[in-house]
Length: 234
Ligand SMILES: [Zn+2]
Image (cartoon, rainbow, N blue to C red; front, top):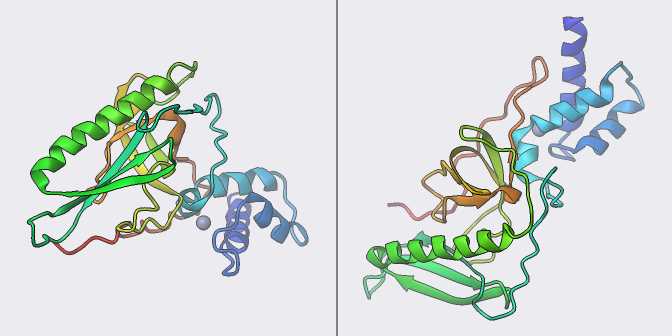
């Protein structure tokens, strides 16, 4: 029995990791396998394998179908009613500025300002970022939601809302993680984000989903990608 499941895992790995498809999804992997192989539980094995593939989870596009959660539809009516804020360090320029913040108005759907400020002002902006997020959370929580995450859960984060269009950033995957939940705040969670991530650590539940931790026998975790943002050397 064990020998059989090991063989199955190997077959799934081979189909799923075919170079042309680079970590194929469930349907593609099944298509590749089903012409030649059938075993009992095959489709479930494929599903489980892919749920446990971190590379696939980080790169898949989510369609906001998080079970049990409503996707909050934020429709701001005024300019600057909802603001997303994000930023990163940069080498000091001639004015002594060493940080770039981008403020994105959700009404205009684009960055209205990119402000360069030094590290002291950064803290102020960080507080504003938290305030802006808090506002967004308040709006989101007006819709009823059930949250099934708890402290110490390990989750992926949808990068929707990170400033992928900001020119200073290089975010190459759809999602980030696995990150650990440190604290619960209403329907949002503080995550143990890595040093490269400079945004708010507070994430709404609708952007999170749990990391699967039931690898198939002999399924191996891929190594973590090194650093996700193209940072200047410190
Ligand atoms: Zn994979």
